[in-house]
Image (cartoon, rainbow, N blue to C red; front, side):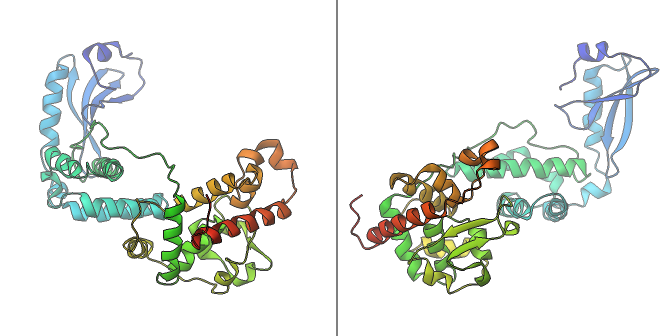
Length: 352
């Protein structure tokens, strides 16, 4: 909360040591002692608390001015840090606290969009200018703004910076709801392009279209998991549940190429997309498209959820505990119908 004279005057002096920091000015606040209330400021790499005056002998306005002056007094540690050095330290810290994908996203956004130079010299105007350049890609703009704030708040907390220049900035951009479904024409173009794409990425894309699996599940597939069905152990699924899925004639030859050794998602997808003339899509959109096409073919929702290894929806709660039926026959029928439809689509004979 933002400190006010009225709020400070209302604080109880009961001998309990309590700190109240101001949301409007990071690292500035008051501390309640048995003897009264003091204005304090946190400063330095060791986050040392420094008392700057007693209330009401010093007014809140005077305390703010004094706090800003103290914060602007550069210590040697802060003065020597560049943005690049601080980003490296931040990413090391993130790797210990977050999932690898989160740290990778921070690295991409910060190294691509954050200004370079001495960290303490980077201004709010510079940061806003960088974000404004992303206005034509509102999703990237929103993600970059979040990464900037997380990084700068970390810098303040760890003594790399005295304050966050964009604290309180209204969120820019927006992240679109994940509802992209490829049209029949887009799906046909993508599948044909995947057949001609570099391996193993082309095989991976075809498998995503044919099975509705997640990309990590496709890459992790092992030959010993393949019989007349695909069985993925719970250790390799997102929800930790073993997933058994039938497959058809289009999928069978692709499984003979296992195991797939692959990295470089971004570059491989860009090479494939450069050969296409379709709107932007993600690989996860293929899973959503898979489910949507099963719905239009009449596959019951609970069968589709089995094929996707969903444990919510039809299989949540009591149903998930007591319904142990595998629906394998129903999934085989749905798989056969889907592959026949997809083959007609690829051959240009679809009536849909």
